[in-house]
Image (tube, rainbow, N blue to C red):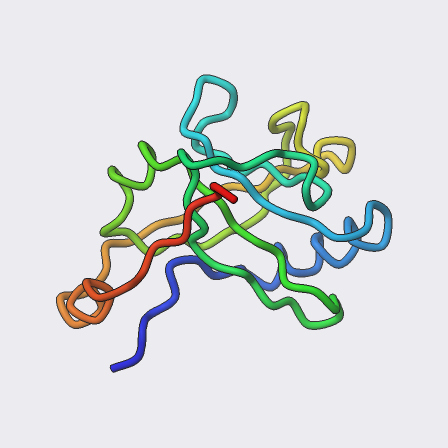
Length: 134
C-alpha cells in the first residue's frame, strides 16, 4: 500500500482556492490549533506565514487549475493530537478567521476528519515528516 493522503480537499474548497489564487497568487495553509479559529485551517499567500521547526508539512495539495501545489502545514503539537486522522478541507458559509484569505468572501474553510483505517495507519508508520525548519 502506498502512503495514504493526510489531507484532501472537497470540490467546493478547490473552487474557492482557484478564486483565491487568481486574486492573491500562490497559496498555503496553516493549522495552528491555537486560540484564533484553532480548528479552522488558515489560508495565506504562500510564504506569508513563516513556518519553523515546530511546524510539519502534511501535504502539498494539487488543485486542478492551479499551477503550483498548495502546502498544508500544521503545528507539531497539533499534529501529535491529529496524526491518526485524515483531514478534508471543506468550505462553509460564515465568517472565519479574520487573517485567512477567504474571510472577505463570506465563507470559511473548515476541517472534516476521520480516523485512519488500520491499513492506512500501518502504511503511514514509515512516513518521513517534513518540518518547516530550513
